[in-house]
Amino acid sequence: MNEPRLRILFAAPVWAPSRAFGGPVVAAGELVRRLVSRGNDVDVVTTTIVDLHRRPALRSSVGVVDRATVHYLSTPLRYRWMGITPTLPAALARVNRPDVVHIFGFRDPVTTGVAAWCRVARIPYVFEPLGMFEPRLRKVLLKRALDATLYRGVARGAAAVVVASQREADGVVASGVLAEKVRVRGNGFPEPSGAEANGDLRSRLGIAGNAPVILYVGRIAAGKGIEHLLEAARRLTGAHLVISGPDDRHGTSALVERAQEDAATAGRIHTLPLTDEPPHDLYPQADVFVLASAGESFGIVAAEAAAAGTPVIVSDRCGIASFFEEGEALIVPYERAAVVDAVSSVLADPELRARLARGGIAAARRTSWDHVTDLQEEIYREVASRTAETKFSTDGS
Image (cartoon, rainbow, N blue to C red; front, top):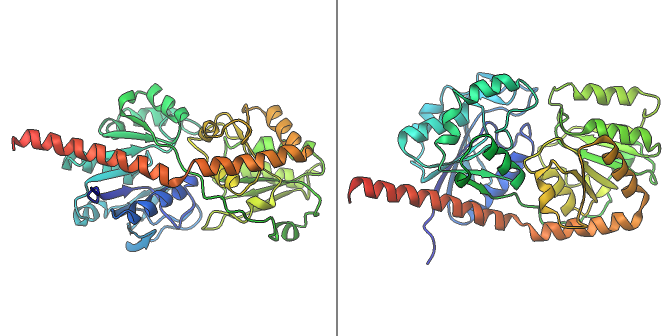
């Protein structure tokens, strides 16, 4: 017997085509596309924020992205990726009452407002904090104060808290979320593409054909391990470092600029803007991809690189590390020396590169988005049916 279709509402601070939010937007698109293809109805409420540099649109609009109806709400004010959307209450009043809501993000007006609306309207919601539940990096004391007051109800009122890895699960439980609420759903890897390294990256950047290329994709931000990669480029005198992503205005771009001017690394540090689509063409052109972050709930870009057959190095603080089996990626401590040594080993050993390339493709074949969507849909149906049973019991019907 086929399951009845679900009406699902996503709430997020930004949505495609924006890449300002990094990997989570890509993950959301993969989920939504499959949820709709299975016959479910999906609406999204979000801001008009595109990136950290352009002013958000003042006029609301409705679009179709990945076959979901996306309500881009007028955003007259914003701080970074957190937008103020005065029309949110009216937008929620117009959407068909959902069976379940997916709160996709934390500490922003849209997700906080939609979570409060769900609690008042008695609509079950799933909360996915996207690695942001533990206060870290900037303004930690302010975050803790707001988490204890303004944002307190978001996790408490959720029917389930969805996380991308066991590492993230341990963190949210340690921060006070009931363990029985937490569901480790994970994220998927793209389908292995079999793409050849036949792009124009080297000619575009003036890199010699025999020079090794180290690739990083993601936000140019504190805590991403970019300083470790700059050190690797300094020590490996023939290697080039390519950094593709938006500047998150953490001051990290200043480190990159200094390395571009330093005599030891000048001409070997390259930056590329991140386009609206994941840069699948870049991965096969690199000799190694590195995500040496101080903390990632998952790390979608490492999954993209692995699926492209690019050898992957990730720090043990990335949630995706636990999704690789032995020999599928190099997992290293978040230490400069460990990262530099790993990069040096991969670049110096063709057999190791070939083994990691095969391993990454094996990991991608094992960890599909279809399987992840199965798990997510099970969570939706569980919380929706639980709420329906409670209502039936309360009504005495």
